[in-house]
Length: 240
Image 1 (cartoon, helix red, strand yellow):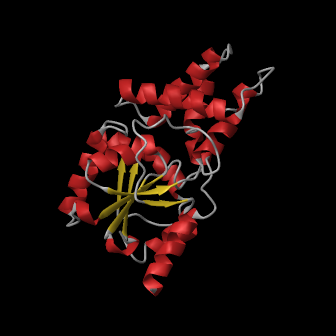
Image 2 (spheres, rainbow, N blue to C red; image 1 turned 60 degrees about the vertical axis):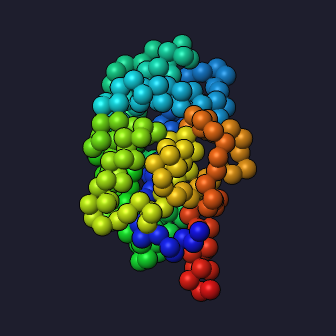
């Protein structure tokens, strides 16, 4: 399997292009700073993953900003803290402040010269718009959870994306799905018949951070520690 064989690269955004774990931990500081013994980073992320994934499954039509507000309230309850709904909403809107990984803009600019680029993201349209300024490129297509009415790992999200790209002349065999999350992305992408490229942003760390553990241990055939490493491999292919 060669990177240059694919017509389109489809990207998860939060966790792959945007450093959502750092963004989550920083935006939760108003809560964790109140605790006499704050949980460590991974425990914060694991608690967040639990509440987020449950709410995404139970309320699939809820906009991501509003869903995050409920996550904030659930975490406050877990930690015995009182919060106002305004504070919850502030957390929901923090998505636009989460930083991009340092290699993201340059990598996307390079890849856009060789592939059509699309987004399949578990956020609402406003949140993606706030984040997109940090990405540095325009995408050929953007598919959000708000558009589709469900959240990954629902197969509906991948079916919708594959169908829309097919209308634009891109067969699923020409799509490479690029993502960090084995739970949200690579399991359902594989079941949908898509090739996958794992950007293992959490390399060298244990656990799964802000995502739930995947249903199986299968890993995509292509895997890199960063987008910069993916671009380096792409350049080598072209040079070869």
